[in-house]
Length: 545
Image 1: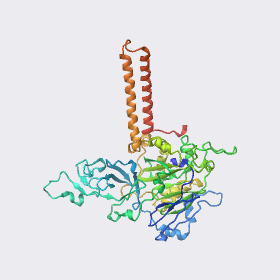
Image 2: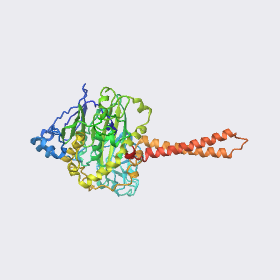
Image 3: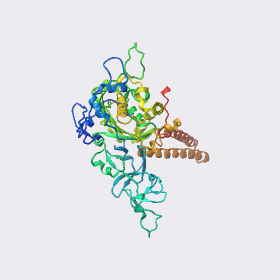
């Protein structure tokens, strides 16, 4: 949601579709910083693009989704109706490599699939496998990597190679046939690929997809690999609401003034006295849907373009001035005079399970890079997490309300008469038209949502971010140690001041120790609250913010 604070231009990208349902991003320099799409289509009928205006020329606002079919040519509509988005024939990001420890296995869930991710030091590759031992289904992510580089299940010690083959069963007699060579002893391996320093996987273990990366690779974003022009930081956070609502929220610029009130620095606009407006700075936004197909869509806001590459990638024009880092579209006029300083953000939105998703946000800029060098990443994560938490609870409840009405009825229960909602409408249009109105969980889930937990549990940061973030986990441990040290100093100072004889310690020294004890005690109490609010739970009350 940090992205929604910002308004500028991205460098131009071109999409090259070399195979069906495959988007690859190629950077190309142009002086006007505009976006364009180049489609090389082996089967043009499968990739017909259309241009549509979401709104009629009349002043009467209309529901966007129910009437959009009237605005699309009959020929293109017939061709595209035959296309259905295959949720299990796509690349999904698992984690940035910077957050993966090669010394241990990691358990992750994507598309409802439990995965174990580990470093195969023999082949020097990351491996993605089913997180279940073939013996009795114990989670391999709770295991270890042994001295021979094999993944060992800690329940009974079975060992597996990077290809999924069982290499050793401790309980098998040494003089008997090698039972570990049975196909039943193997663990399923998923195709994986590293791009932009992010580990991706293909959710199908069929041998037909073993070399799928040779035919289709994840969306490539050259800007993420630019380590010379931009300083960058990455945040990963598990969020207790659905993938659909995460993308909607990121595509909704007009909510920033209200849902994140008091957190973001938002420019103000003058409202005529005759209009009873608000003080948050909301205003009309001119956003229109340009192109939409099975691979995603493009929307325009003035000269800027927003892009969604199905199913996980979203980015758009975000910018800043040299004095205000986080602003939204209400500052467009002011920031347009200074477009040398830019902040770029790329969102990877991962469906985890019904009511749960994962956000990978990469933020990079071409100015003030010294801040990223001077301050550790966890300092920036504190601000990012506060922004995520400030509307997390309401989005969680919003998802439950839509579930009661039915996701396929979104256009009936939601009234979206303004152009400010064009990005959200574009996503819902794509999801309804190609994706079946919701993520296809197969037979793993019914789609039902879990009951809403306590607010403190819902907004928990420790298990959703801190424990999985290398920077925040180090800071958390270090600050806890510092708190204990302050408490020890406080107690020791009081003890020394009380035990020392008057002939040994002067009154001034005694008072100094008492003052030091009080100071350390107060500092430890403040630090304890800071640790809790920063790494565990920080509530946000919209009524008083």
